[in-house]
Length: 38
Image 1 (cartoon, one colour):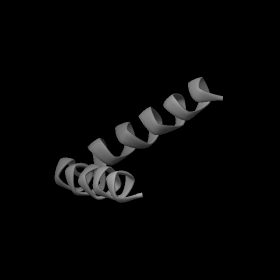
Image 2 (cartoon, rainbow, N blue to C red):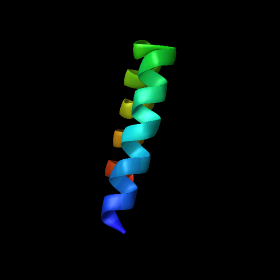
Image 3 (cartoon, rainbow, N blue to C red):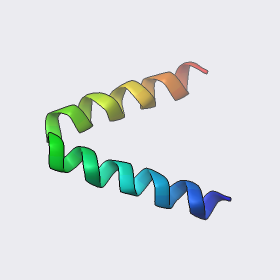
Image 4 (cartoon, one colour):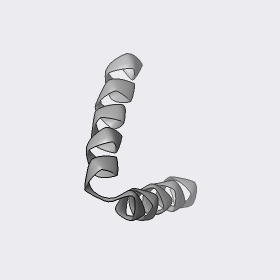
């Protein structure tokens, strides 16, 4: 299960990096802050 999670996450990260690195940082920060708050 965890392996699949990493594969999916890495795939999304690769796509976002191609779209916009700035967007990746914003998304990463949002997810990171969200996980810390949970």
